[in-house]
Length: 120
Image (cartoon, rainbow, N blue to C red):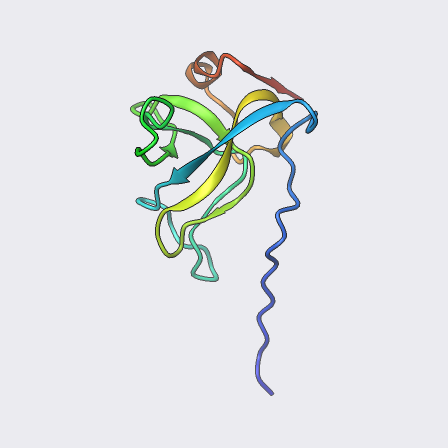
């Protein structure tokens, strides 16, 4: 018998503490530098803090925030960039649950994200 691989495409992880109070926008997420998982998929997890200048220039692709990439928002859901850049929702204003993030935000990221409150 053959081996079956089941892939769950449901975006059920909710990073918002209060989902009814937030502002999000769409952005294209860059696939560069994203490592494939065990299934060969390149997934940028929900809760990843992203930046790169996309708020000032909508043609710029969002990248994971780092010391050289200023924070502009938080990915609301997982984004599959296996086949290249993909469109995603980014939270610009709201209350984000710290326990749902793949990594804790740095002091610089918290400062840059003036309209996001991080809660436990």
